[in-house]
Amino acid sequence: MTVKSRSILAAGAIATTAVLGLVGCSGGSGADDSGDTTKLTVWVDAERVDALKGVAASYKEKTGITVDLVSKANADIKDDFTQQAPTGKGPDIVMGAHDWLGELVSNGIVAPIELADKQDEFLEVAYEAATYEGQQYLLPYGVENIALLRNADLVPNPVATYDQMIAAGTFVVESDGQGLANPYHLYPFQTSFGAPVFGSDDEGYDTSDLQIGSDGGYAFADWLATQGKNGTGVIDTELTGDIAKEQFTSGAAAFWLTGPWNVGAAMEAGINVAVDVIPTPGPEAAQPFAGVKGFLLNEQSKNKVAANDFLVNYLGTVEVQNALFDSGNVLPALTESAEYASSDPIVAGFRAVGAEAVPMPASPAMGAVWEFWGQAEGAILNGDDPTTTWEKLVADIQAALDK
Image 1 (cartoon, rainbow, N blue to C red):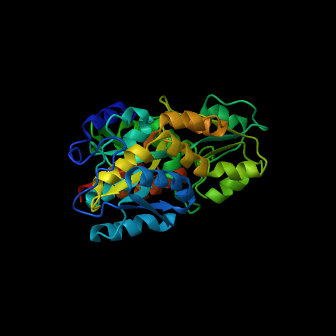
Image 2 (image 1 turned 90 degrees about the vertical axis):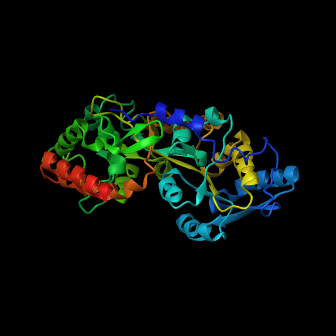
Image 3 (image 1 turned 90 degrees about the horizontal axis):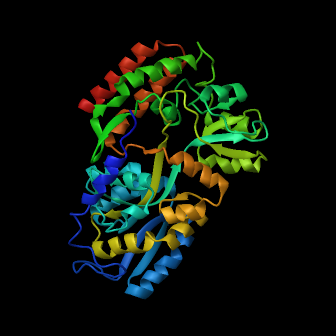
């Protein structure tokens, strides 16, 4: 089973009702009468403040509304927003990630946004990730997923299958170094056996449909056992991210399953990096998780109309998304901007792999999934029986979801 993506996309057509009455025309200021109509406060990470200064000035010129860009540390921005938004002291708009949505929506601190007729302008996976329970909450600007990095000096051409990859050179993928696996990195292999975590319906992921416990999940568990201590030993739970990086950047490893955040280190080390599709060990396509970055609207904003206008009609433009790409080198969420960024072969490579990516589930239920998942995969790789270990994983997750 592959994750149902088109049905999630279709849900966007109804993601409008909560704010339809508030939304002004494209480019208009449309200020809210009940609050401060002269200023919008936007929290952004320090890396992207400069990229947004131009659009803030443009918005001030066209609407008279000042956009106050506040630089925040990445490590603090979510917690600070969660603490301040309910008190009315938070920003009107905050930069964030799509997998925050379940928690923030459940806490009632973010409001739906209205994309009007712009939804088809975004990459499909970006639009899907920005939609939660049938409503649009995120104005996406960037998409990240893992792919297979190849040292093209050691292996000149892409490999077609997982077995060919193992035969061609050393493959590394990070674990936690203490006996646990990393389910995020192993997910493309799991989905190739038709075992996503959850099924999906027209409103997104259906957490009542635990697909990790399907026949495909057990087939993946059996395969995983062949890659551990009692098999090839290719996937080693003692291999940390730092060790994997050292092996690839030193030229000892020919392949590294990782994200764009590690490409710079490899290129600085002089590695001739190519980005390839993830070879599948199962019968279906390997679907990595996609993480989508974007901007969220504070439910307590006193100026929702202007905030929505700024989000959609200014931050959601090609010029701004190009500028955000230039500042951070993250694949843009707008299709036209993604084309602009894809002149870089590394970005184009990640984009090609991302065509099969699925949004990382944003449900709060994932909090119950990650720990059990990593423990089970690590145990299987280290020799435990795959069937009974996977049965326990499914039971543990189900029990946590039922609480």
